[in-house]
Image 1 (cartoon, rainbow, N blue to C red):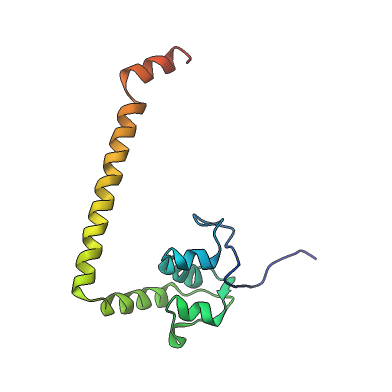
Image 2: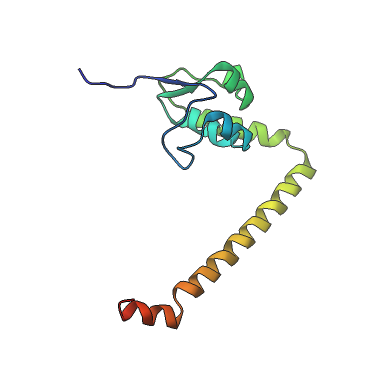
Amino acid sequence: MSDVTLLRKLTLKSKLNFGQYHDLSINELINLQKKAYLRWVYFNCDKITFLDEILEEIKIPLEFRILKPGKDAIKHKELDELIKSKISGLSKHINEKKKKKYNKVKRKISVTLDKKTFSKDSLRLKNHGK
């Protein structure tokens, strides 16, 4: 017999052990405001579910919950649209400004790293084996 995990029911102390937040607990992800990521995990990973209080915390109402093991990306999109429709216009505007600022800083960092990595001096040193 093989040791196949049929269903993981995660608690606040559990870790996902995959993805970009593999080393963080569910509680830490909630504190970091990564609820959208946890909703994505719930709807797109067929063998992972959460305790009911966590599902309430990450804003998955009873009518959107699915039977596990199983996944439903369509319900995920519907829930995201519902949550986005409840956000006020001012909050949307503030989120867009934050996103633009973040992208601008990210581009600036990327350009400076490229300039540093691909400068004439660094490429010359690389060609000379240093």
